[in-house]
Length: 368
Image (cartoon, rainbow, N blue to C red):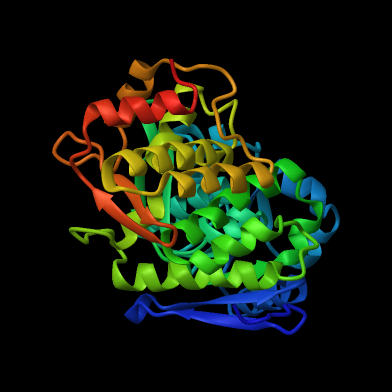
C-alpha cells in the first residue's frame, strides 16, 4: 500500500462510460465543496442539501458556509431514517425547493443519508444528479461509492432502491474528527471486509495496528478500500455476474442484515451487525469451502481489536434470523446467496449452502 497524505488533494476515477465520476480525497475539502456548490448555483442550478441532525449539529455555523445558497433538509439520525416516510419527506422537500431537472441533490452524512438522498434523486423527475459528501468512515469506504441507493421496508433492508451513480464524491477525513468512537469502529468493519475479500496485506495491516482517526495510514487505507470497490463496480456495476462480481462486497451482510431486521434496526449499528455477520460467514466458510479454522479465529480477533462485537449481545432465535434471510434482496430461486471465504483475500459466492451449516454458523455467534 502506497503512503498517501490527504493534505495534498488526490482523486480516483471510477470508469463507467457516461456515468463515470471522480472520488476526491483530502484532509479537509470544505472549501472545495463550497466552491463546487457555488459554481453550480452561479450556473443557475439549484442545490438541495440532505443531512441529519448529528451532522448538522457538528457543523454548526459551517453548514451555511460550506453549502452557500443551499437550504438543508435535516432528518433524524439513525437507520430508521431510511424509510418510506422519510423518502416522501425528501421528495416533498425537493419539490418545495423547486428543483428542476438541472437540480442537484447533495447527500451530506453517513450511509443512511447517502442511500436515502440518492434514491430520492434517482426517482425525482425520473432522475436528477446527486453528489456524495460522506461524513462517516463506513460511508467513505463503502456506501458512497458505486451508486447503490435505497430504503428499508418492514420486511427487510434495502428492498427498495435503484442503481444511481453520483456525479462526484468528496471524501474529507476532517469529518472523522468528530465522529463518535462507536461509529468509527462500525466503519472499520467494512474496512476489514475489504481485506477479507480482496487484500490479504490490508487485513494483516489491520491485525498489526488498530485503525483510528489518528492512524498514520488512515488516508491510504480509505483510498485502498475505494480502489477495491471501484474496480469491482467497474466490472459488475449492476451486480449481474453469475459468480463473484459485485456480490462479493456483501460478505457478512446476509447475516448482518438479518440481525438488523430482527432487532428492529435499534440495537446494532450497521457495521456492528456486519461484524457479527463476518464471524458467522467465517464459520460457514470453514464448514462449506475449507476456510482454515485458524483464519476464522483471526477474523474474530481483528474485529475484537477494533472494538466490534463478535457475538450477539443477546440471543436471537435461529428461526427468526432464517426468516429474515429469506427476505434478503440477494435471495435467488428462494435460496440465500452467501459470500464465503476460501482464504484471507479470496472470496466466492455460493448459492446452495446447506441449511444445517447456516444454522450452525448462526449458533456460533450466539443465536439460540
